[in-house]
Length: 117
Image (cartoon, rainbow, N blue to C red; front, side):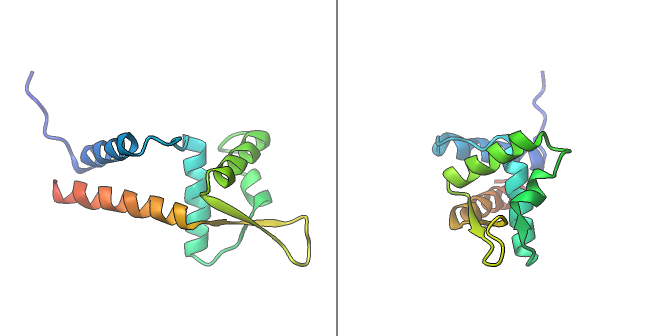
């Protein structure tokens, strides 16, 4: 069978896979990755996301599962919960330096894939 030349996206997936092998700490599951994407996108756009906003994303999974995944992201050091000064029941969610580093690593993989390296 003749080998197919991999597309840029396939090269990107291979680069991510090699990152995961180099850094064998607990990998984010797909729900955690989606939550982290939403949190980081909101932060880069200057929006303040609350835990309640994230828990209402029923298209991802149940509220209980979302709450558990947010807790996982906090424990793994990807996000920080910030209590609202006027209403202690509200907590905003912001990405940490570790989360930003995660996206820097993904960007490097994407740039390499686009260059064909």
